[in-house]
Length: 83
Length: 428
Image (cartoon, rainbow over all chains, first blue to last red):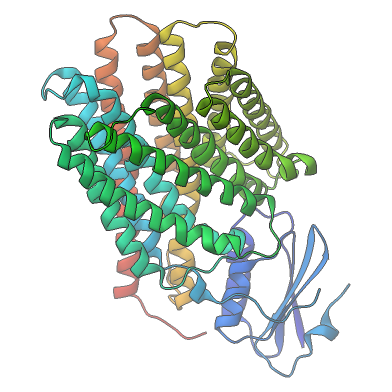
């Protein structure tokens, strides 16, 4: 499985969402998006939920959120979390 | 900490909800410019004793309330996780009654001799605004873990409810339906809650969320974002008790204006130290807005312990209006391109226009220049005596400012519809 890393902590809204959606649209089932953001990206999580993509978010601290999204139900996202 | 869930997109209102309010606000802005122009050139003779009311309410309800309600319907799900079910139906009711109510109210002020018009304005505006605010307040009250933004929004909405209730009293008095023994006190309460509570508190609350998010600025100091909105609301309540019981309230006004000056300074400081210092018109709108807020509140502050000339007081009104409009424009130029792109992209339109194709940043910069020119002409028309030609020119700039925005909002809607009708949708 291939990790698509997107560190969006220093990017202005809505560039993180734009980049994340671009990745999600083109991503294969053997890949997963690993996003690091300074906020909980509610619109992105809404999209993931609506598309029924397995997803997980984790608040490492007040400024750092880890968001994992895949198109493959067999991925264990908790195991892929890198904190 | 782990959560594999999230919110549903069903919670986000359709784009039409927001655009309906924003387009309406721009139309009322153009109308305001036409009213000013035709009045000062003598083309139409308005009721001069109520002219101030006509201008203030075209701006406060037609422009500001429309923009702010539209933005709230859109932003509440995002900033506070608030769910408003069936938003389209609710917004149709609120919007329809609001537009009719504003028009009826303006006719009531202008004709002044038809009591029924005041009663109809109470009916339409009362139902529309109270219905919208009660929907929002009920949802915000259900939030378990309040942020400083959601708390501030709650206080701002509560202030607006109070301003409306006081406004209803004033309209019923003007229509002769009640005797209005407390007219002057209620009038002061009405504008105190509308200006310091609804408009200012809402902008402060939203800024805690969006300034940092949009511009990657340092965070507001924790004590500041935690206590500022509570402090403002408590001072407003204390001020209203002082007004009701006929006590001296200038000291409260002094504190309130000082707080807003500090807030403006802190926000300018945050914007100056943003991580990615790109030159974007919306940053300039924010900077201008904060500068104008500081100037406006400085005049209010000075006026609490000395008597300033009327034209200087008038400048405090102009700068306050400039502050509120600058922030509203900054938000609109962020919200509209984002929503257009986001909704289309999420629906699977791979050829969805990018944000700068919806409203190009250069167009926002041109609007910023028109807006600044408008404010400068109003500023000098207040400062100079017998500057009628400047007022006429200022009125034309009001039309140009809102007309420019209206054109680009309609363009965004057309672009959205065109993409849906003429490009291919894919499942992803």
